[in-house]
Amino acid sequence: MLRTVNRVLLALAGLLLVALGAAVLVGALDLQRRWDVRLPAAWPFDGPDDVLLTPARRQRWRGRPWWWPAVLATLAVTVLLALWWLWAQGRRRRLREVAVVSGGGEVDVVRGRALEEAMAAEAGALDGVDRALVLLTGRRTAPRVRMSVVLGARAAPAGALARLTGEVLRHARASAGLGRLPAEIRLRATRHRAERVG
Image (cartoon, rainbow, N blue to C red; front, side):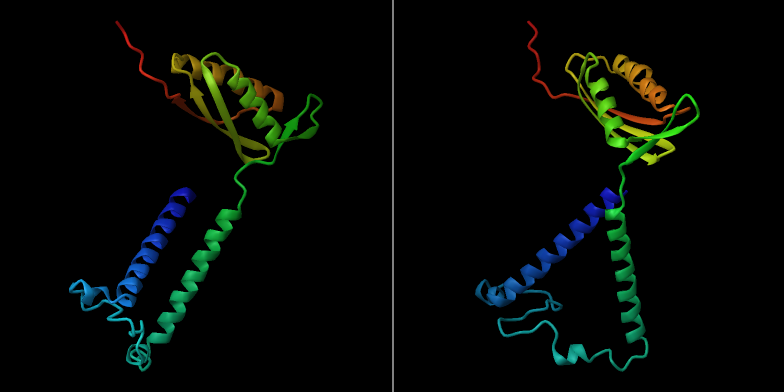
């Protein structure tokens, strides 16, 4: 979700900047007169000496009682959305540590990165797997696995998936002493040239 929000915000900011830059460029270079182009009546710049907001436009809404509350509410919503976005960017998605229950019932802590690397190495060593990336999310007592696996050109996806769930995830669950380890596994095939048959 956050990735989608980032892309939408980036696209909107880019469009706004391109539109504003085009308006300034057309007005500053007086292109509408040089190229004899008619611009819409709402176009902000009419020529090189024009300003974006004339004194009449700046003072147009001052006498209205709803103007300042609307401005303040818009600014407050903008600040709140910016703070939410900043908080969402700074929030850690990756699990830093996992609570491991030992045989005697004691709880130890394993670095999340170490468990990710061990799972990725075991998955990458399977037949037909070119490479694997593992990300641990969730809580330290209830981790979740997100695995992205790139399969070789001749790999069988069903077989690779069965070995990933039956070996890699089972070993990780057993080594961490977890009753369950939910996982999302995404399989992709590596790009390769088409083979000529003949």
